[in-house]
Image (cartoon, rainbow over all chains, first blue to last red; front, side):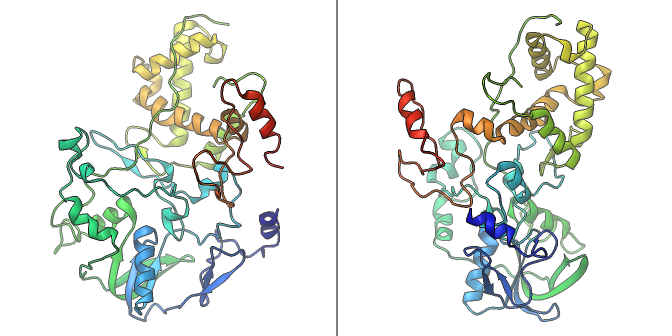
Length: 250
Length: 159
Protein backbone atom coordinates (compact mmCIF):
# COMPACT_ATOMS: atom_id res chain seq x y z
CA UNK A 1 0.00 0.00 0.00
CA UNK A 2 1.15 3.52 -0.73
CA UNK A 3 0.96 4.69 2.86
CA UNK A 4 3.03 1.72 3.96
CA UNK A 5 5.69 2.69 1.43
CA UNK A 6 5.69 6.28 2.69
CA UNK A 7 6.11 5.06 6.23
CA UNK A 8 8.93 2.70 5.28
CA UNK A 9 10.79 5.36 3.32
CA UNK A 10 10.45 8.00 6.02
CA UNK A 11 13.84 9.20 7.22
CA UNK A 12 14.67 7.71 10.63
CA UNK A 13 15.06 11.14 12.22
CA UNK A 14 11.59 12.28 11.05
CA UNK A 15 9.80 11.16 14.20
CA UNK A 16 7.55 13.91 15.59
CA UNK A 17 7.64 12.26 19.01
CA UNK A 18 11.40 12.89 19.15
CA UNK A 19 12.17 15.96 17.01
CA UNK A 20 9.81 18.88 16.23
CA UNK A 21 8.93 19.04 12.55
CA UNK A 22 7.89 22.68 12.23
CA UNK A 23 11.32 24.35 12.18
CA UNK A 24 13.74 26.13 9.85
CA UNK A 25 11.08 28.05 7.96
CA UNK A 26 8.80 25.20 7.05
CA UNK A 27 6.00 23.04 8.46
CA UNK A 28 4.53 19.70 7.33
CA UNK A 29 1.82 19.82 4.69
CA UNK A 30 -0.95 17.60 6.09
CA UNK A 31 -2.45 17.08 2.63
CA UNK A 32 0.62 15.73 0.84
CA UNK A 33 2.75 12.74 1.82
CA UNK A 34 6.17 14.10 2.76
CA UNK A 35 5.16 17.62 1.68
CA UNK A 36 6.09 20.93 3.30
CA UNK A 37 4.61 24.43 3.41
CA UNK A 38 6.64 27.58 4.13
CA UNK A 39 6.39 28.90 7.70
CA UNK A 40 7.72 32.18 9.07
CA UNK A 41 10.04 31.73 12.08
CA UNK A 42 10.22 34.41 14.76
CA UNK A 43 12.98 34.65 17.37
CA UNK A 44 11.85 34.60 21.00
CA UNK A 45 13.02 38.20 21.49
CA UNK A 46 11.01 39.48 18.49
CA UNK A 47 7.78 40.92 19.83
CA UNK A 48 5.11 39.31 17.65
CA UNK A 49 1.61 40.75 17.27
CA UNK A 50 -0.10 37.61 18.55
CA UNK A 51 0.97 34.56 20.51
CA UNK A 52 -1.82 31.96 20.46
CA UNK A 53 -1.98 29.11 22.96
CA UNK A 54 -3.82 26.21 21.36
CA UNK A 55 -4.23 25.37 17.68
CA UNK A 56 -7.61 23.63 17.61
CA UNK A 57 -10.75 24.97 15.93
CA UNK A 58 -10.49 28.29 17.80
CA UNK A 59 -6.76 29.03 17.96
CA UNK A 60 -5.88 27.43 14.62
CA UNK A 61 -8.55 29.36 12.74
CA UNK A 62 -7.60 32.60 14.44
CA UNK A 63 -3.89 32.06 13.65
CA UNK A 64 -4.71 31.56 9.97
CA UNK A 65 -7.02 34.60 9.78
CA UNK A 66 -4.57 36.91 11.59
CA UNK A 67 -1.63 35.74 9.47
CA UNK A 68 -3.62 36.27 6.29
CA UNK A 69 -4.43 39.80 7.51
CA UNK A 70 -0.70 40.50 7.79
CA UNK A 71 -0.09 40.15 11.53
CA UNK A 72 2.94 38.32 12.91
CA UNK A 73 1.64 35.24 14.73
CA UNK A 74 3.21 32.39 16.70
CA UNK A 75 0.89 29.51 17.59
CA UNK A 76 1.70 27.10 20.42
CA UNK A 77 0.51 23.60 21.11
CA UNK A 78 1.56 20.83 23.42
CA UNK A 79 1.50 18.03 20.88
CA UNK A 80 3.32 16.83 17.82
CA UNK A 81 2.94 18.00 14.26
CA UNK A 82 1.49 14.83 12.78
CA UNK A 83 1.31 13.94 9.13
CA UNK A 84 -2.14 12.31 9.12
CA UNK A 85 -1.55 10.60 5.76
CA UNK A 86 1.45 8.63 6.98
CA UNK A 87 1.71 8.64 10.79
CA UNK A 88 -1.28 6.48 11.65
CA UNK A 89 -2.14 2.87 11.14
CA UNK A 90 -5.86 2.31 10.62
CA UNK A 91 -6.20 1.01 14.16
CA UNK A 92 -8.07 2.41 17.15
CA UNK A 93 -5.51 1.48 19.76
CA UNK A 94 -2.60 2.90 17.78
CA UNK A 95 -4.44 6.16 17.24
CA UNK A 96 -4.75 6.78 20.98
CA UNK A 97 -1.31 8.40 20.71
CA UNK A 98 -3.32 11.47 19.66
CA UNK A 99 -5.12 11.78 22.97
CA UNK A 100 -4.33 14.00 25.91
CA UNK A 101 -4.00 11.31 28.59
CA UNK A 102 -2.36 13.21 31.46
CA UNK A 103 -3.93 12.58 34.85
CA UNK A 104 -6.66 15.22 35.24
CA UNK A 105 -8.88 14.88 38.31
CA UNK A 106 -12.67 15.16 38.11
CA UNK A 107 -14.33 15.80 41.45
CA UNK A 108 -17.30 17.40 43.16
CA UNK A 109 -20.92 16.42 43.66
CA UNK A 110 -21.41 15.49 40.03
CA UNK A 111 -17.98 14.62 38.60
CA UNK A 112 -18.09 15.00 34.84
CA UNK A 113 -17.62 11.93 32.68
CA UNK A 114 -14.96 12.81 30.13
CA UNK A 115 -13.45 10.68 27.40
CA UNK A 116 -9.79 10.17 26.50
CA UNK A 117 -10.57 11.79 23.19
CA UNK A 118 -12.07 14.98 24.67
CA UNK A 119 -8.68 16.62 24.15
CA UNK A 120 -6.17 15.94 21.45
CA UNK A 121 -2.44 16.41 21.99
CA UNK A 122 -1.22 17.60 18.63
CA UNK A 123 -0.67 20.64 16.45
CA UNK A 124 -4.25 21.16 15.35
CA UNK A 125 -5.54 19.94 18.72
CA UNK A 126 -8.74 17.93 18.59
CA UNK A 127 -9.43 18.93 14.98
CA UNK A 128 -6.87 16.24 14.07
CA UNK A 129 -9.13 13.48 15.40
CA UNK A 130 -12.58 14.98 15.98
CA UNK A 131 -15.58 13.10 14.64
CA UNK A 132 -16.38 15.83 12.08
CA UNK A 133 -19.65 16.63 13.81
CA UNK A 134 -19.96 20.36 14.51
CA UNK A 135 -23.62 21.13 14.99
CA UNK A 136 -24.86 24.65 15.37
CA UNK A 137 -26.60 25.06 18.70
CA UNK A 138 -30.35 25.23 18.18
CA UNK A 139 -32.24 28.19 19.73
CA UNK A 140 -34.07 25.93 22.23
CA UNK A 141 -30.80 24.37 23.43
CA UNK A 142 -29.72 27.76 24.79
CA UNK A 143 -32.75 27.51 27.11
CA UNK A 144 -32.69 23.75 27.58
CA UNK A 145 -33.81 23.81 31.24
CA UNK A 146 -36.85 25.96 30.45
CA UNK A 147 -37.83 24.56 27.07
CA UNK A 148 -36.69 20.93 27.28
CA UNK A 149 -36.44 20.21 31.00
CA UNK A 150 -32.78 19.21 31.23
CA UNK A 151 -29.34 20.77 31.64
CA UNK A 152 -29.18 24.49 32.41
CA UNK A 153 -30.22 27.65 30.63
CA UNK A 154 -27.29 29.48 29.05
CA UNK A 155 -26.69 33.10 30.08
CA UNK A 156 -26.58 34.09 26.38
CA UNK A 157 -29.20 34.02 23.69
CA UNK A 158 -28.77 32.25 20.35
CA UNK A 159 -28.91 35.58 18.52
CA UNK A 160 -25.89 36.79 20.49
CA UNK A 161 -23.92 33.71 19.47
CA UNK A 162 -25.05 33.66 15.87
CA UNK A 163 -22.59 36.31 14.70
CA UNK A 164 -19.70 34.13 15.92
CA UNK A 165 -20.75 31.47 13.45
CA UNK A 166 -20.24 34.09 10.77
CA UNK A 167 -16.59 34.32 11.69
CA UNK A 168 -16.54 37.60 13.59
CA UNK A 169 -14.17 37.90 16.50
CA UNK A 170 -13.67 40.48 19.19
CA UNK A 171 -10.39 40.71 21.02
CA UNK A 172 -10.12 41.55 24.68
CA UNK A 173 -6.86 43.29 25.59
CA UNK A 174 -4.66 41.37 28.03
CA UNK A 175 -1.89 42.71 30.17
CA UNK A 176 0.51 39.91 29.37
CA UNK A 177 3.82 40.40 27.59
CA UNK A 178 4.42 36.96 26.16
CA UNK A 179 4.50 33.24 26.85
CA UNK A 180 6.87 31.00 28.74
CA UNK A 181 7.08 27.71 26.89
CA UNK A 182 9.03 24.47 26.90
CA UNK A 183 10.52 23.19 23.66
CA UNK A 184 13.17 20.52 23.19
CA UNK A 185 13.75 20.33 26.96
CA UNK A 186 14.39 24.06 27.25
CA UNK A 187 12.25 26.81 28.80
CA UNK A 188 11.93 29.85 26.52
CA UNK A 189 9.98 33.09 26.43
CA UNK A 190 8.21 34.43 23.33
CA UNK A 191 7.55 38.16 23.46
CA UNK A 192 4.12 39.17 22.16
CA UNK A 193 1.88 42.24 22.08
CA UNK A 194 -1.24 40.12 22.51
CA UNK A 195 -1.75 36.65 23.91
CA UNK A 196 -4.75 34.52 22.99
CA UNK A 197 -5.64 31.55 25.19
CA UNK A 198 -7.52 28.94 23.17
CA UNK A 199 -6.93 25.61 24.90
CA UNK A 200 -10.37 24.01 25.11
CA UNK A 201 -12.80 24.22 28.02
CA UNK A 202 -10.30 22.46 30.30
CA UNK A 203 -6.84 23.89 29.63
CA UNK A 204 -8.05 27.47 29.04
CA UNK A 205 -9.73 27.76 32.48
CA UNK A 206 -6.74 26.00 34.01
CA UNK A 207 -4.32 28.61 32.61
CA UNK A 208 -6.61 31.50 33.55
CA UNK A 209 -7.15 30.22 37.10
CA UNK A 210 -3.41 29.60 37.52
CA UNK A 211 -2.73 33.19 36.48
CA UNK A 212 -4.15 34.51 39.76
CA UNK A 213 -2.05 37.23 41.39
CA UNK A 214 -2.52 40.11 43.85
CA UNK A 215 -4.21 42.25 41.19
CA UNK A 216 -6.38 39.45 39.80
CA UNK A 217 -6.97 37.17 42.80
CA UNK A 218 -9.46 34.98 40.88
CA UNK A 219 -7.28 34.72 37.78
CA UNK A 220 -7.29 36.72 34.53
CA UNK A 221 -10.58 37.24 32.67
CA UNK A 222 -12.57 35.98 35.64
CA UNK A 223 -14.48 38.98 36.96
CA UNK A 224 -17.67 36.91 36.50
CA UNK A 225 -16.29 34.10 38.69
CA UNK A 226 -17.56 31.64 36.07
CA UNK A 227 -14.22 30.51 34.62
CA UNK A 228 -14.06 26.73 34.93
CA UNK A 229 -17.69 26.41 36.09
CA UNK A 230 -20.62 24.63 34.42
CA UNK A 231 -18.45 22.60 32.07
CA UNK A 232 -20.40 20.32 29.74
CA UNK A 233 -19.01 17.80 27.26
CA UNK A 234 -20.65 15.33 24.93
CA UNK A 235 -22.45 12.48 26.70
CA UNK A 236 -21.09 8.95 27.16
CA UNK A 237 -23.22 5.94 27.92
CA UNK A 238 -22.49 2.48 29.26
CA UNK A 239 -22.51 -0.04 26.44
CA UNK A 240 -22.57 -3.16 28.60
CA UNK A 241 -24.50 -3.98 31.76
CA UNK A 242 -23.69 -6.96 34.00
CA UNK A 243 -26.44 -9.53 34.71
CA UNK A 244 -27.43 -11.36 37.89
CA UNK A 245 -27.31 -15.18 38.29
CA UNK A 246 -27.33 -18.07 40.78
CA UNK A 247 -24.62 -19.17 43.20
CA UNK A 248 -22.17 -22.07 42.85
CA UNK A 249 -18.54 -23.06 42.32
CA UNK A 250 -17.08 -25.00 39.43
CA UNK B 1 -15.90 -11.04 29.13
CA UNK B 2 -18.12 -13.56 27.31
CA UNK B 3 -17.14 -14.03 23.68
CA UNK B 4 -19.12 -15.61 20.82
CA UNK B 5 -18.34 -19.16 19.79
CA UNK B 6 -16.79 -19.67 16.39
CA UNK B 7 -14.59 -16.58 16.32
CA UNK B 8 -10.99 -16.14 17.38
CA UNK B 9 -10.80 -15.10 21.02
CA UNK B 10 -9.91 -11.46 21.64
CA UNK B 11 -7.06 -11.26 24.19
CA UNK B 12 -8.91 -8.77 26.42
CA UNK B 13 -6.79 -9.41 29.53
CA UNK B 14 -3.57 -8.96 27.53
CA UNK B 15 -4.76 -5.68 26.01
CA UNK B 16 -5.78 -4.34 29.44
CA UNK B 17 -2.46 -5.58 30.84
CA UNK B 18 -0.64 -3.69 28.08
CA UNK B 19 -2.43 -0.53 29.18
CA UNK B 20 -1.28 -1.20 32.75
CA UNK B 21 2.32 -1.80 31.62
CA UNK B 22 2.29 1.50 29.74
CA UNK B 23 0.53 3.16 32.70
CA UNK B 24 -1.61 4.82 30.02
CA UNK B 25 -4.13 7.12 31.70
CA UNK B 26 -7.40 8.32 30.20
CA UNK B 27 -6.91 12.08 30.45
CA UNK B 28 -9.28 12.29 33.42
CA UNK B 29 -9.77 10.42 36.68
CA UNK B 30 -12.50 10.46 39.29
CA UNK B 31 -11.03 11.83 42.53
CA UNK B 32 -12.47 8.86 44.45
CA UNK B 33 -10.46 6.37 42.39
CA UNK B 34 -6.73 5.79 42.75
CA UNK B 35 -4.52 5.81 39.67
CA UNK B 36 -4.91 3.14 36.97
CA UNK B 37 -2.54 0.44 38.26
CA UNK B 38 -3.51 0.78 41.92
CA UNK B 39 -7.24 0.75 41.12
CA UNK B 40 -6.92 -2.50 39.16
CA UNK B 41 -4.70 -4.12 41.82
CA UNK B 42 -7.12 -3.25 44.65
CA UNK B 43 -10.23 -4.07 42.61
CA UNK B 44 -9.09 -7.52 41.48
CA UNK B 45 -7.83 -8.41 44.96
CA UNK B 46 -11.08 -7.26 46.58
CA UNK B 47 -13.35 -9.12 44.14
CA UNK B 48 -11.32 -12.28 44.69
CA UNK B 49 -11.54 -11.79 48.47
CA UNK B 50 -15.33 -11.47 48.14
CA UNK B 51 -15.42 -14.74 46.17
CA UNK B 52 -13.29 -16.61 48.69
CA UNK B 53 -15.24 -15.24 51.63
CA UNK B 54 -18.73 -15.91 50.25
CA UNK B 55 -18.17 -19.04 48.13
CA UNK B 56 -14.92 -20.55 49.36
CA UNK B 57 -13.08 -20.41 46.06
CA UNK B 58 -11.29 -17.93 43.83
CA UNK B 59 -13.28 -15.75 41.46
CA UNK B 60 -11.99 -17.62 38.40
CA UNK B 61 -13.22 -20.88 39.95
CA UNK B 62 -16.81 -19.65 40.26
CA UNK B 63 -19.47 -20.69 37.78
CA UNK B 64 -20.11 -17.93 35.21
CA UNK B 65 -23.58 -17.19 36.64
CA UNK B 66 -22.10 -16.76 40.13
CA UNK B 67 -19.39 -14.53 38.72
CA UNK B 68 -22.14 -12.41 37.16
CA UNK B 69 -23.95 -12.16 40.48
CA UNK B 70 -20.82 -11.05 42.28
CA UNK B 71 -20.14 -8.44 39.62
CA UNK B 72 -23.75 -7.27 39.92
CA UNK B 73 -23.34 -6.76 43.69
CA UNK B 74 -20.17 -4.80 42.97
CA UNK B 75 -22.21 -2.51 40.75
CA UNK B 76 -24.99 -2.15 43.31
CA UNK B 77 -22.49 -1.06 45.96
CA UNK B 78 -23.38 -3.98 48.25
CA UNK B 79 -19.76 -4.85 49.00
CA UNK B 80 -17.65 -3.24 51.68
CA UNK B 81 -14.84 -5.64 52.59
CA UNK B 82 -11.66 -4.15 53.98
CA UNK B 83 -9.80 -5.28 50.84
CA UNK B 84 -11.50 -2.45 48.87
CA UNK B 85 -9.40 -0.04 50.97
CA UNK B 86 -12.00 2.68 50.73
CA UNK B 87 -12.31 2.53 46.93
CA UNK B 88 -16.05 2.60 46.00
CA UNK B 89 -16.69 -0.81 44.33
CA UNK B 90 -19.34 0.50 41.91
CA UNK B 91 -17.01 3.26 40.79
CA UNK B 92 -14.22 0.77 40.15
CA UNK B 93 -16.59 -1.27 38.03
CA UNK B 94 -18.24 1.57 36.13
CA UNK B 95 -15.34 3.96 35.70
CA UNK B 96 -12.34 1.65 35.59
CA UNK B 97 -12.99 -2.03 34.85
CA UNK B 98 -15.88 -1.87 32.38
CA UNK B 99 -14.55 0.97 30.20
CA UNK B 100 -11.09 -0.63 30.07
CA UNK B 101 -12.52 -4.06 29.17
CA UNK B 102 -15.09 -2.82 26.66
CA UNK B 103 -12.56 -0.54 24.96
CA UNK B 104 -10.03 -3.38 24.78
CA UNK B 105 -12.64 -5.68 23.24
CA UNK B 106 -13.89 -3.21 20.64
CA UNK B 107 -10.40 -1.99 19.72
CA UNK B 108 -9.79 -5.45 18.23
CA UNK B 109 -10.52 -6.12 14.54
CA UNK B 110 -12.26 -9.40 15.42
CA UNK B 111 -14.89 -7.41 17.34
CA UNK B 112 -15.26 -5.06 14.36
CA UNK B 113 -16.02 -8.05 12.18
CA UNK B 114 -18.55 -9.25 14.75
CA UNK B 115 -20.52 -5.99 14.52
CA UNK B 116 -19.87 -5.45 10.81
CA UNK B 117 -17.69 -2.36 11.11
CA UNK B 118 -14.87 -1.80 8.64
CA UNK B 119 -12.54 -0.09 11.11
CA UNK B 120 -11.27 3.49 11.23
CA UNK B 121 -11.59 5.26 7.88
CA UNK B 122 -8.20 6.96 8.13
CA UNK B 123 -6.15 7.70 6.16
CA UNK B 124 -8.37 7.09 3.14
CA UNK B 125 -11.51 8.72 4.57
CA UNK B 126 -15.10 8.09 3.53
CA UNK B 127 -15.96 8.89 -0.09
CA UNK B 128 -19.54 7.69 -0.51
CA UNK B 129 -21.32 9.88 1.99
CA UNK B 130 -24.96 9.54 0.93
CA UNK B 131 -27.57 7.44 2.75
CA UNK B 132 -27.38 3.69 2.04
CA UNK B 133 -24.07 4.04 0.21
CA UNK B 134 -20.89 2.45 1.50
CA UNK B 135 -17.27 2.58 0.47
CA UNK B 136 -15.88 -0.51 -1.21
CA UNK B 137 -13.93 -1.52 1.90
CA UNK B 138 -17.05 -1.41 4.12
CA UNK B 139 -19.04 -4.59 4.65
CA UNK B 140 -22.69 -4.85 3.62
CA UNK B 141 -25.13 -5.26 6.49
CA UNK B 142 -26.61 -8.75 6.84
CA UNK B 143 -30.27 -7.80 7.29
CA UNK B 144 -32.57 -10.59 8.54
CA UNK B 145 -33.64 -12.75 5.60
CA UNK B 146 -30.95 -11.31 3.32
CA UNK B 147 -27.86 -12.88 4.88
CA UNK B 148 -26.94 -14.74 1.67
CA UNK B 149 -27.03 -11.50 -0.34
CA UNK B 150 -24.76 -9.75 2.17
CA UNK B 151 -22.43 -12.77 2.22
CA UNK B 152 -22.11 -12.63 -1.55
CA UNK B 153 -21.52 -8.86 -1.61
CA UNK B 154 -18.99 -9.09 1.18
CA UNK B 155 -16.81 -11.50 -0.76
CA UNK B 156 -15.73 -8.45 -2.77
CA UNK B 157 -14.96 -6.29 0.29
CA UNK B 158 -11.29 -5.56 0.79
CA UNK B 159 -10.26 -6.88 -2.63
